[in-house]
Length: 258
Image (cartoon, rainbow, N blue to C red; front, side, top):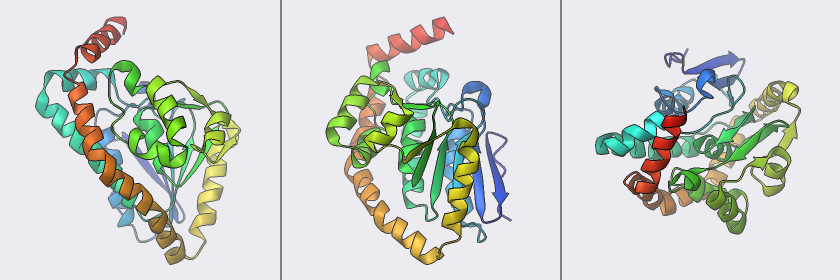
């Protein structure tokens, strides 16, 4: 059995050949802090080493899929260049690990998927979104370049014009609109979401594994090409955003209100 101990911030449950991966910081809306970012980057290699695994369901605990980055983490990146550099390296590692992961991933977007949370959903293979959920990428709104995946991967799922509209404005994308844009596969009633995601994952797990895995790999070469083309610049630009006065003021404002 693979080692799936991530200190509680990420849970992995076995359901026959399906692994249920749950972002588990519900009190913080599963924001990527306190080891969660590193755990999500690491879990794919661990599942890849689990020879009994054939498919994955990814979801969030509580009322959100993920709120994306957290304000204390942003403040640390503003104050400490080494923290910032480490964060950008981890962002690249996370994207690369998801893109090259060989098993099919069904994402159950159980609540708001914001920033990196929305990007991770779009990088998966089948996206089921609760009728009460939404996607949004507010990087630009707070003063950040949308560098950790949105600029690279959203244009492949929708159109360049649509990606520009929602990445530049940060506007919320309701569940039905996310499907219409190509950022999700279908809307599912919230109470049925996880059961439906498990059903889809088991269907994929029951198909011939080499055919499933190499078809996914062939399609994901488009994502890998986008990552090679875009991520070096976009992550460097996002790192530079942490030196701007606009972001510093916004982070201080958020901290004052919290």
